[in-house]
Image (cartoon, rainbow, N blue to C red):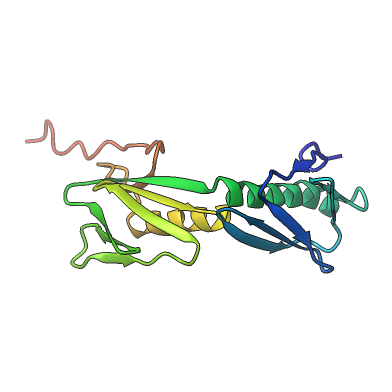
Length: 183
């Protein structure tokens, strides 16, 4: 058995979990509502505020889906209770982020400002000119939005300019040695 897959998920107070006939799991909580369609082979049961996921056989596919399904449901419950956040840092002269309403206005060294509009359920914030915080209930959407913003101007290896995840280490390269010693 999968160690992750066989661990039961306890449903906290204030969260309701409903199962549809087609293996659709819907989780409602204080931070919103999330729903996901689970693989039809996985058996998801809710009893006495505990969710368990079972697999029908020891096939390689079923083994891989077992832990995945349990983790996805657990992330939905954590998302509607606590939520998820990702932080990004902006490095570079003149690079900055400003929040304008719901949108984020980024100056990244282009000839025009880049305006990022968040999808439904995602909140963008710029507590400082060089910091961006992405938050929401869906872990997948928060990570995807962070990756999309990072891809606008990824960190370059010579000076480290660009957008990077908070705490991410950028491997720096040494520049050209130039024409030292040549005459």
